[in-house]
Length: 304
Length: 311
Picture 1: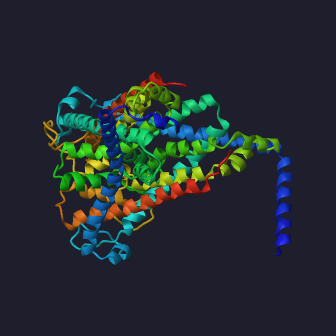
Picture 2: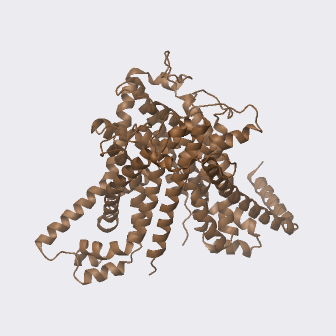
Picture 3: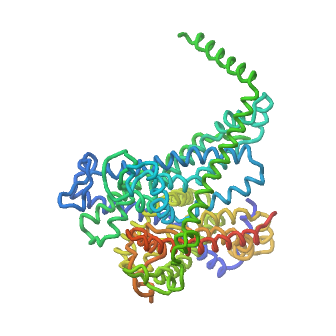
């Protein structure tokens, strides 16, 4: 850039103040690296302390999680299974509804409808999760109990459904971006070969945008795994290894909330479990996030 | 089956599919209409849930449809929490939210905008810049409760800030920084290069250009993004529970080192109590929270329209 030669400040004093300003800005930007470092280190330190007292084999093979009982057992699987159960239910709601809405908005709806509906759907994403939790517990669960008699007051079904509703705009918005980034020449070529609108949307545009769509689904899943208040309020506080959506369970995030609400002394085994569970949660979401990032990079169709 | 045979079969089946399709044009168009119907269904399902949620909360809080008691009274804003639903209010929580969020804005806005300016205006394309960028996009996807664990360890324990407003605000600052940085960068990037070049041509230094040209041109987008980030922080519950924000605080905070509670935590606390009256109080709290968020979002939309620029 030729401009950069002209940026030389005219005198020394100004050169120094320019340098100071640049340094301050650099420090501000570097805080992001410190934050990541802080997260990894603080999780790692306390997790190592945890594994000094509990063997990693027990953590990965035991099927019960009872760190607050007299006979303590530290198997992570009940928490992991509950996390994936509620997340899977959420995805069953969010992926079909969100994807169909995205394809509809991008390929079928008029510009006016798109501009009205998208911000309206964004409101769903802006509702605090504690409100969704309240809604799941006090509205959806009593409603579902009319149809499913065996449904407990706390269950992963209604927590998962409400979480899915929360994630619809997330899937819709990201997938719609991917769909509308597909160039029009592809659509026109398909129409030229005699395709209908449906065939253009499902056989041409969706496959061309598949990397962005899959990335949006993976990111939504990662959101569901890390979601806390909905499951803490509506899914229960009972760690158990089950895939039954009608009974109370405890996710990794609910466990962190439950322990945080009590008065946990620093340096106790209970305190360390917080970080062992947190580290497991962080690993899961980190892998999902990296995967979605890689997915977009690797399989992006580049046009023009 | 040989490769040739396989190829023949697949071509045959493709041809059959085309034949079937061509002979059935009405069905092929019908599928499109079916998709549109499902599309509308998805949208109406989502928005319908939103409507039901809001009406249900309004009804529980004020009893407007069911004729129940109104919980959203003057007392609700003027009372502290209590074991008795009739005497419980959200005063401490509302002020706690106000203090925590003000401090969060104070910390996060200048740092995030400075970071965005660095990345857009100063940084050269090297490994360090890329490292910062990867970190920011990764941090934006880290679950909020993890930030709570970070705040508990680093601010509450290591820096000895305890369960204070300061710890809460610093934790929320780290949480919203990636959001503000991303929005600010987009807004700064949208300022055309020609404006910067004009500024340099007049002899301005880089910082003079940033301060007098780039920032005034991009402030609308920066403010909009920051306001949306703040509205996210207002609704956050999990990280503040993790750092130990207390739920029962029968006084107003006097300084940034005081213990505190916030509106979402108060709502969570009331929701977890078994009595129906507390659920109604929670609904009143939700209504206040949603009203605050709605006002803030309206402000963001107003600012976006006001500062919208086309080049």
